Length: 230
Image 1 (cartoon, one colour):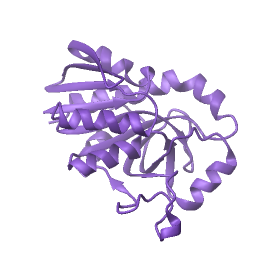
Image 2 (cartoon, one colour; image 1 turned 60 degrees about the horizontal axis):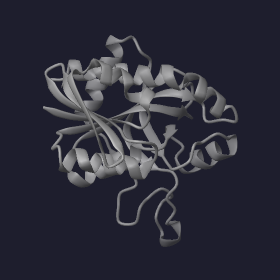
Image 3 (cartoon, helix red, strand yellow; image 1 turned 180 degrees about the vertical axis):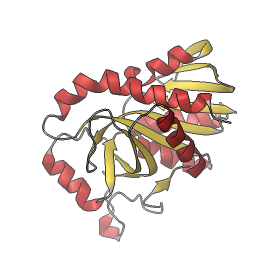
C-alpha cells in the first residue's frame, strides 16, 4: 500500500521523516517530498507549505503522479470544542471550509457552489487512527474540523465560526482542501490534528510555544497508525 502524508510545516513532518527507512527527498511544486518505508508500507511524506492552495496542489500531485492509495493530513490546530486542551488529539470524521461564502445563492456558509458542505473521512482510517491513539494512551476526540486561509486568534472569530458550525472541534488551514481534493479523485483521506492553542486572543503566543511539541505528537500518532495498518 502506498500512503501519502501531508504536513504544512517542518515540525509537523519531522518525526515522520526521521522514522522512514531508506529516505529519498526532492522538491516539487514548491513542496518538500520524502519517500521511504514505514512498517509494511511505501510512504511519501510532504511538507506542503501553509494554506488551502498548497495543500490541494500537494494532494493532487500525490494522487495523480504518485498514485497513493490514501492521503493522511497531520499537524496542529486551534481547539474550539468543549474540553479540548493543548496536546489533545482531534480526528476528523468530516471537514468543511469556514471561509467560503456563497450564501447569497442559498448555500450554507462554507459550501462551495455545486459541492457538498462536508467532506467525510474514511470510516476505516478513522477507526484505525483511534486505535493508534489508544495504544499511545493519547486523549482523542472525533468530530468536525474546519479550515480557512486565516489563523484564528480571537473570541469574535471563534463565535462567528461556531455560529455556522456549532459542532466544530478545531480550526486550521489545510484539512478541508485536502479532503475536498481527495474526494474529487475518489481517494480515502483522514485529517488528524494535535491541539496547539485554543484559537483565542493568546493563540499566537500559545501556538508558537507548543507547535513543535504538538506537531511532533501528531506525527508520532500517524507513525503508530501506519506501522500497524494492514
